[in-house]
Length: 368
Image (tube, rainbow, N blue to C red):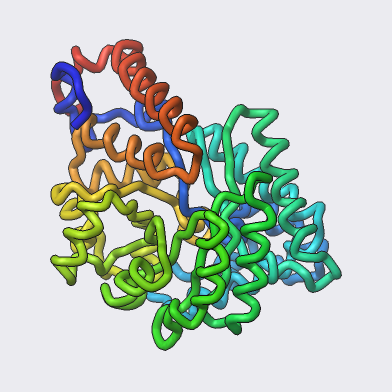
């Protein structure tokens, strides 16, 4: 709970928090994949230009190229990235998609976003990994200048690629440190692909004082999270859905303020949970874990930052104060210099207060 006196609007909860308030609240998104977060109309336009079959309308296109709303296995889910990667093979397309993503987020009240992707997946037409990062950075920079959003890049290795390839990505994370890349990530199918296979990549990143986040506890148990933290030096955990299965480890994560990048819609879509009522999100908040809310893949999961926040507020009956503290977790967890984080946290708190006054929320005592 934040310092300061209580207000009647602290207790507004669930459906009693209007959409326009959720839209206006300052947000972060620290876990969003570029190649899973295109605008659908952009995918159709670029796919048509690339000769892909875009016939049959939106429903047919979704069935052909994107994961189903429920029930995809992790391997099936990951295979759909092949379709979006196919059209992200030029600097022009990468720059465009990055710019559009950041602009869309800014329009929904996102102040800071960290966009992740694997540079090695965008070189089929001759781009070097450096050129891939430069193109994405250019798109994000354009959106920053246009909309005022702040952004960082997380370069991502894959559990299923050879460790030597992950080392190449790790070197990029270090080479681009201070130039818009804020961290190194490891993603992909956890089963039979332990993060420790890529130890040399993590050592290189950590020895050069770059940040690390790792997908863990999404498709595998808490031992994957343990390995990410204690063998690979993760500063944050992507997803962490199964952390609750190890109480001692969960206490460690809480005590050390290790952020969990939670993605509700994505967890439901990929079958990590069967129903959101069984998701440990509320339990994590009650135990004091530093949970932040993220979209993961806006196109695949049919979500946006505001939709994801609405989903969390309604599903877990969050109060307005809990909602604000959840959003503050995102600002506190960002891979930003501490002074910049302090400024964003302070400005976010001030904005929370001003929005309550602007919308007269202290006078709103009943669910509409």
